[in-house]
Every structure is written in C-alpha cells, then in structure tokens.
Length: 208
Image (cartoon, rainbow, N blue to C red; front, side, top):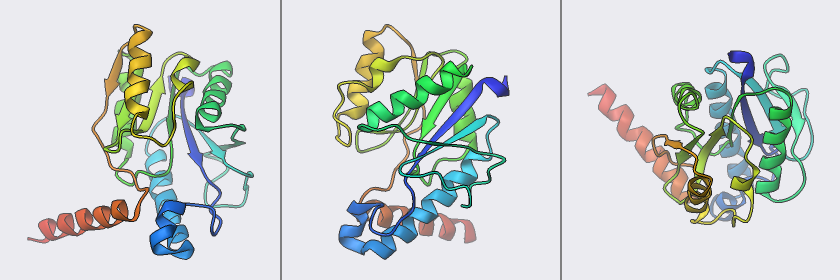
C-alpha cells in the first residue's frame, strides 16, 4: 500500500531575492529568505511523518547537497509553464510510474503536519479527491486516486477563485471530494504576523 502512495512536494530553490517576494516587499529579501527556510523545515518535518514515497520537485535546479535527505526524497525538476501545467505534469509522471494515491503540497503552510497528510491519504480510500482549503480561496493540498488533468486547466492561479473553480471542476466530473481542515498559508507579511501571534497565544495557554 505504502509503495503506491506518493507525496509530491513543490518547492522553490531558496535563493535570496527569488522566494516569498510578497513577504519581501514589507520585510526585505533577507527576512523573506529566512522565513522561507523556516517553512521548508516545517514542510520537510511534516513529510517525514507520513508513510509514502516522497517526490521533491524543485523550481530551478536539483540540489543533491541540501537538507532534504537523498535517501528519503526522490528529487526531480518541475516542468515549465504556469502552476497548473507544472502540477499536471508531476501528477501524470508519478501516476505513470505506478502510483495509486497521489497528494501534492507546497511549502507555504507551517500548520500542516503528518497527521493531516495521513488523513488525506486515508480519505482517498473512499473519495476520488481530497483538498485542503486556505482562507484566501486557494488550497494547501490536493490529492487524487486517479489522474485527472482537467482540475489543473483554465484556472487563474494565485487568485481567490482557485479553490472554487477546482471544486466545480471536480463536481462537473461527478467525482467525490473530501475537504480537510482549513489551514493558513504564508504569503503576505500579515500572514506571518498572524502565525507568530497564534504561536505566542498557544504557548501562553500551554504555560498557564
């Protein structure tokens, strides 16, 4: 079972001035890079908690010497094109290689953990799709138990309509979808400040 479960991770190569550009507008390139490396660490830890093959897709180049262990992550390069084309290509690739349940995540969601990833894979036992919504109208996770390219096409990425259009596409296919808990992702400075505030409140609650 585990051998047919695949977790796809899409990441950007962590280079100064090339990651988290919306964060950088308010916080500067160096701080944006530091935050992105923190998000990568959280994503890597969560992915190691799930029983699945892990396929790490880099944005620009494959780094065999980074903090992602080569023995745990099959390293590949993202295809060209917009986000939809790149995700479609990744899903098609792993399904052609024998995967039966495939989930994709990015590296923007520090609240994501192994338990939610396991819940997502379990949902694909009973549903065709699984989706993890974010408050901004997007999603932090998408999974399917068969390759369906239409969910990646004719969608305006990085807009508040992404989730709505994706769910409509699934509905139009007459397929079932399981919705995971809503989690926050980190795109803007306000998102990061909100995350830090939530952490502080949680830590204060735990010490009382």
